[in-house]
Image (cartoon, rainbow over the protein chains, first blue to last red):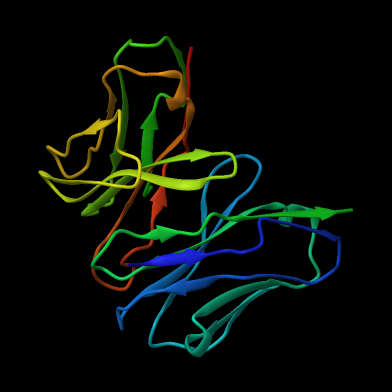
Length: 113
Length: 115
């Protein structure tokens, strides 16, 4: 069965600190896709990144970076120099094509000015 | 503009009064899904559909019905709403193959209150 675990329920950081959100997944499929979504206080769900299981290169987009490690079944998300606007709930998700996309329970990030 | 549209955005109703939340997408996506979001429980899947006339139960289907008669529409039906169905509901759609497979596009959410 597919499973996504986001062990951190809530994290608080002070502005400009770096923060890493953890995501651990379980799947028996060899081809799968990992995602991160952001849900700001306004409530909408915003797509951040998609990664396929054959591409273990880390990705950087501005202050955001993602570390995909198949050896530990993890797909962690780091925000560098956090800002108040980064305050949101972040969801990690897994999709393999054989079953519906599975979400973790989310991590609520609060960035304090 | 590519989008998922759900209506109504806000609704207050009473126990037992049937209601339908509509969802429509304009991206020709095969996959559509309904989620409910409750504090501390994350996003829980209610029903999903891999294509027209194909629907399956998600994690929390009790008290809900869906239909997929057309590719673009996936309405969520609450035949006899109860207060425990008070929640924030999201509709989403995606391709199931190709470069963007699995990438969900979400509607803006429908906040439902059942009194």
